[in-house]
Image (tube, rainbow, N blue to C red; front, side, top):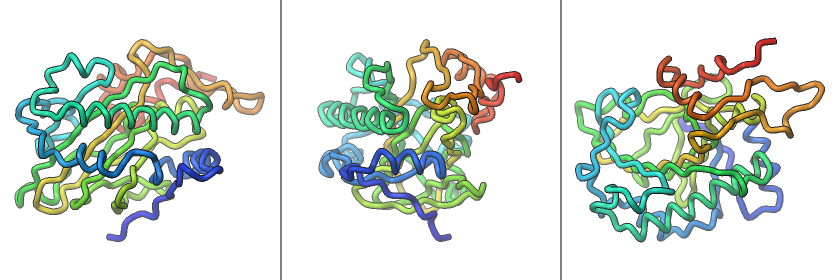
Length: 274
């Protein structure tokens, strides 16, 4: 199947902010190039030569996304990672340099979407995934269809094996082709809410297409757990009143998990009652 035509944003262009806003409304996903994260750092972080997920077990991290237990991985929050046992088996200096660079990039992208976000408390949740795809698991879902409870998710693809699929604006599930040295950005539920429904959150999944080891890195830029979330004032006017009630991020996560609303349905529970 031919991959979806993905918008490509060159962050070094003067009009990159406007282009990001446009694709956030129309698509909810895009690739970025010239993002100032050195290729050698991406290669080192993505190689996993230093990474043994058995030492930092987290197969139960997202069991509702990983029914077949094809994917294993480690997760860490940037703000407490230095005190975490996740350090075991990792070249920590590489991971720390990568997470700091990707966090800076993520906040820059969010600022282009919503206005200056540098003063906001953003949590960077950094997850490395290893898919052990066998002949028995090929053709199954590595991670099932879902949207992310984040502002944005930044994905670093496997260099060799594909499998990422997204739901495009027409509602069709389509594969995403890889592009060397680029990063793939997906908007989450919080981006849709903060933009008063103007930006599109994106459902996506990973299919185990080919036998082998598939490696990826996902970075989630999201609010702190106790942050009050509401529609951004720049998306509100007389003709566009708030569509969503204010709430704490912790409440969204609770509603999402308790109702098993993993594809953005939780936003309907937070709509204003007119």
